[in-house]
Image 1 (cartoon, rainbow, N blue to C red):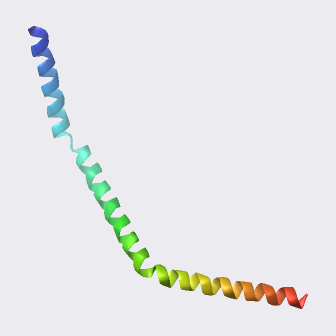
Image 2 (tube, helix red, strand yellow; image 1 turned 90 degrees about the vertical axis):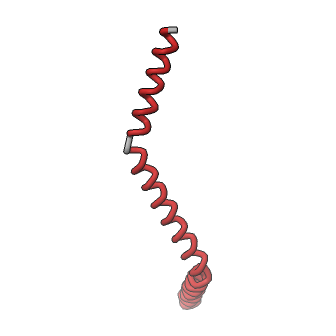
Image 3 (cartoon, rainbow, N blue to C red; image 1 turned 180 degrees about the horizontal axis):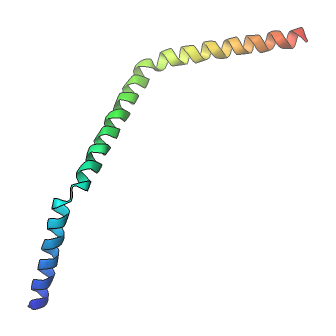
Amino acid sequence: MALIVHFMNCLRARVVRFRDDIRGVSTVEYALIVVAIIAVVAVAAGLLGDAFTTTFQDLSDRMTDAAEEVSSAV
């Protein structure tokens, strides 16, 4: 019986320490901030995706044209 009481007291002490530990709260807050940033980046990428694709395709076309001009000049 004493062993069970000792076990329950240890378990209760661990639960109280876990409950009173504030380090976990800041971890959860940082995780929520990271999730919010990821959501904002995902929405922005979705909204601006076509603009980025067009810009990089235009840049690629210009570089290809310039390379062809250099090749034909040599």
